[in-house]
Image (cartoon, rainbow, N blue to C red; front, side, top):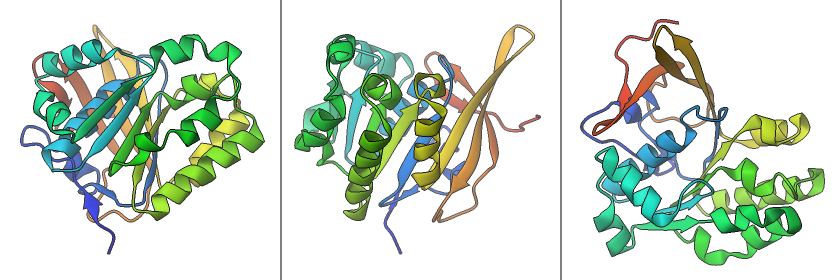
Length: 231
């Protein structure tokens, strides 16, 4: 039985709704549009994994280190101890993304950065914005087989993807090769936005997996799983 990487925290039941955690060796794809909640879910997963003594590398195209720390604390996810004790390695790649137009070797550089892949779980948020200038079918296959090799060593790789940043062909390569495929939906409902985690595929779950999980994001509280989800 594969080791399960749990991300349970006492104040929400996201871990229970998602089968009790990600089995070791899983490739997880989290897909959603801009502002759909990909970063917040990634941050919640990262904090929960650390709380369960699972080491995490978090590669972000979205925030500086300071911005990330501020964001986590604004949701009451106190991560400073994990950064200090090495359970969490945070790598901001904002300047690289801005320079990425001229860099077509970004995928090769990502695969060569060995220290990124030493932790139990590697989160790349947002992968699509890192590779959109350099990805073609061949390079994407190379990248996926590289991730699969890491999966074979028991690593969990969590990739967030904004589908409009990749061609349909490339996006579907990630969807078909992953073990866990989640899409984030959001639709305006009156003055609020109704957000839903849709689980399209979840291989090797330890427990039952919810198909549709409503959630909201609250300051000082972070991610809140809605009790009853009405579609």
